[in-house]
Length: 251
Image (cartoon, rainbow, N blue to C red; front, side, top):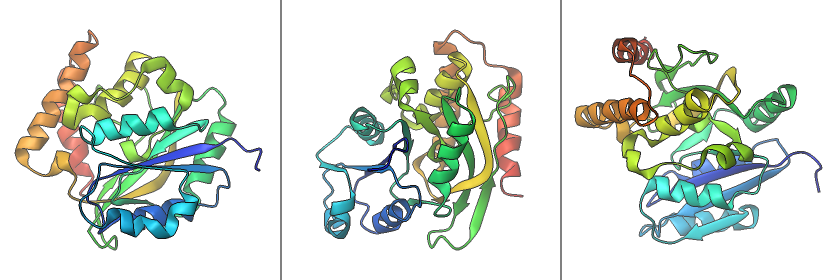
């Protein structure tokens, strides 16, 4: 057994037969030797479980049961995770290369006060061959959320102790739950976080929050709600800088 700190990776999936093997292979090909892989399936009705069969001996926990949606499934995974650090990789996303988890754990080791680490992300076409958007983040400071930014959630790796301190994902936020979680950790609780200036995840374009103009508007409203429920005033810069930040990703 390795004496290295363990990292838990959670993938939640529902009817993801078309892409789940890409995701699983990207996790299992990581060169970091101490990985607990957890898959939470929402009782898929397609061939998802059949596609997972060849990898079962390398999946630490595989749960297949009905859930209340993606955030409920993620919370199930978070509560089951036993690693020192936890990351979440969606069922149609992949790590950018085989050294991602090693890089993340090296960053935690070099910054022992860090409660979370995040990086950059690229939105890809469905074949994962063409870059559509390049989400380059930046180091956190007090203007980060004020300027409409957030860490890309699939690149957000947190110590298990972070969830002990701030709680789990708030399912009431629907499209904005990932924003509220990172906002709560970084802006409200002021937990130390470090940015890795490197692309860590390739995400297939077409996520729920970006699927329509209505969803984008709803997400923006929920992001504002994250400020107000924590007793903070939404700054004017949040509105226009968020738009500019998103526009820059296409350039």
